[in-house]
Structure formats: structure tokens, C-alpha cells
Image 1 (cartoon, rainbow, N blue to C red):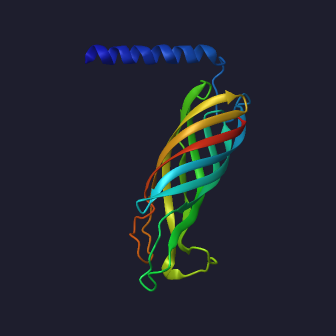
Image 2 (cartoon, helix red, strand yellow):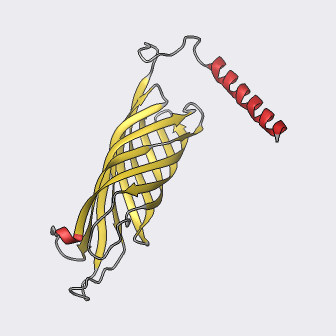
Image 3 (spheres, rainbow, N blue to C red):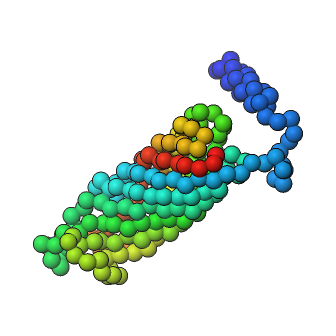
Length: 203
């Protein structure tokens, strides 16, 4: 065990030394003129489960990148599932669950200059969910809709396809405040989601 730990620390030391040789000799500071900033826009397509049923996610976000290694931005996701609800008032009427959520993204980016690397986006925001009656207009009903707070950390494996184009596979987990809605549980929106993200910008 000790030998394994020693090898791990030696390996980390070699990686750090290599990275240092490739960087400028000047130390970067918060107000350094050598700090390089950029930004990107992204589209995402994902799969999750809502109330134990398959659901499709589609989203977008835009972020400002600070010195290649930290991004901050805004974005959100829309969703719809294939649940067929039979409301207690009318068992012949079917419903889907639909809605969206979004807010502030904070995204540390680890080893961004490597062709394959990791980023860890965290979403802090708000959302809304509603039971949507098939083939009818969307109408507001307080007992069949609700708003919620959301906290969604994720891990993305990013691939630098070109200088201005990245693709990433993502896995994350949604934590939400309690949802109060007819015929649903309070944690109906919590769960794992996986997805594909396409990013265009100056990285």
C-alpha cells in the first residue's frame, strides 16, 4: 500500500513539473495582463427519469471562461416525460409532466489544455413543473403545477475537437426542494440525468 501511494505521489509530481515547464514563467494573478478569457455557447440533449418514467431533456447555456479554467454563466433545461396520468376527477384523461429549470452555472475546468479533460458544472436555480393534458391547451391550475429550487452538480468528460468546438458526455444529479402537486410525490424531480453537450466558442 505504501509503495502504491509513493508511486502515485511521484506520478503527480512528474505531471505538475511537466505542466509547469509548459506554462509561462510569470505567475498568474487575478489582475494579470497575461490572463486569457473566453466564452462559449452550448446545446445539450439528455435523458432522465421523472416519476420513474423516461423523460427527454433539451437545454442551452452560455458561459464566460476565466483563464481557461473556470466558467460562469446562465442556462437551463426543458423536459417532458411520457407519463399517462389518470386524474381522479376523470379517469379517461391522460397527462404528461413537462416544465423546465435554469439559473446560474459555475464550472471548474480541470486540465483544459489536454485533448480530453474534465469539467464540473454546478447549476443553482429555479424551475417549474406541470401536469399537461394531451391534445389540449396549457392552462394554469395551482393544484397541477408547482415551482421548485434546484441544485444540480455534474461531471463532464470533454473532448477538444477543434480550437473552437468541444463535445462532452455528462452525468449529473438533480436535487430539488419539495414539490407539492396533485397525484405526485414531493421528490418527483430528483434523479440522475445523462447527456451529450455541444460547445462552440473561444476556450
